[in-house]
Length: 145
Image (cartoon, rainbow, N blue to C red; front, side, top):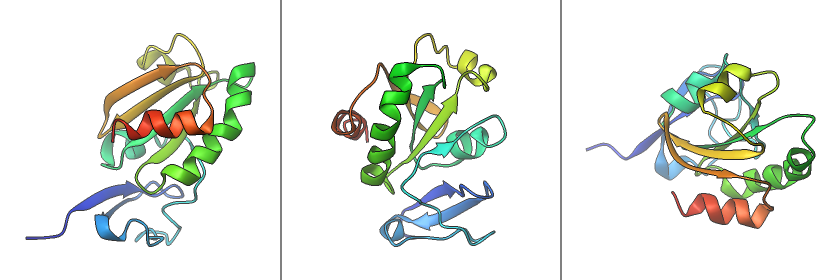
């Protein structure tokens, strides 16, 4: 019987990597390009890398749907960044700019921003609209993991 593992998409090349769960916290690197799989920063998501990180990877991902003109979104951005340092490597954090990635915003029925959506293997687990502080983001997310 093999040890439990998680499929992690590389933030640099979008290649998929099978990482033993016991080694997720050991700074794993991509087997394809050698980049670090975790950087404690949210990943910019778009149509080009959404499928790898949200649908094909088994690592849960918390996505912030936002827009550059949104005041609450800009206020929450440093809080979301700080949450990445606390939540990785148990999950990845990503950001989708709904102004430039309108297809993804429409696909998930985003009506207000910021909206956080937690995904696991392409399925939506939870959704929360409105700006939150770091502690609230971490607490809200951990209840679903």
